[in-house]
Image 1 (tube, one colour):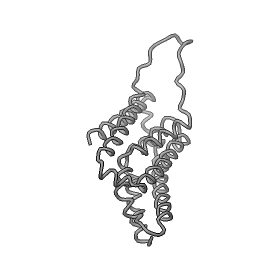
Image 2: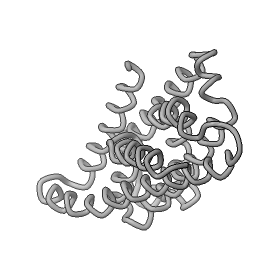
Image 3: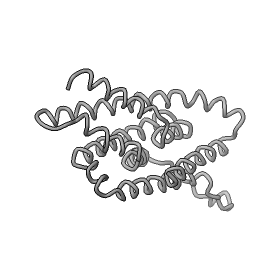
Image 4: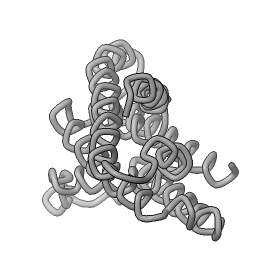
Length: 205
């Protein structure tokens, strides 16, 4: 692959990675609620999911979506419902009980956060369209296919990691300014509302 082709792919990857979507929203939400280290775990799951999507694209996902358009619709709806589920959690009412018997909601484990990121990546229409439509044009066919696939996938993963790192680093700065005006519970509900709106947007797209 020549440098001009790789540069074009890198530019497309950066634009796609930095465009706000469900993966960025998940990283920001986890940063504000649980801290940067936990957000990095979910972002790691997202990057792992990208490799799965890229592998599926190399195996013919793009052709499958062209032949069976409903597959993309099914993935889009599944991803939208998952986002709505995540967004509704802060709004679920807590039944008042005696203090001694109040059950503590277990904090999500690192495995839970990793799977959150992976699930979002695997059902993200933005990533599916990128790897299903644009990615095969750069990978091409013929000798060196495996090397090109690995180089391009790693390049996209690196762009995603940089984008997530920027948002994760900036989120506490923005959150600190909102914290003076918004209570923690209201902040969680606000983040949840954004997830719900994004999920509804995907359903209506």
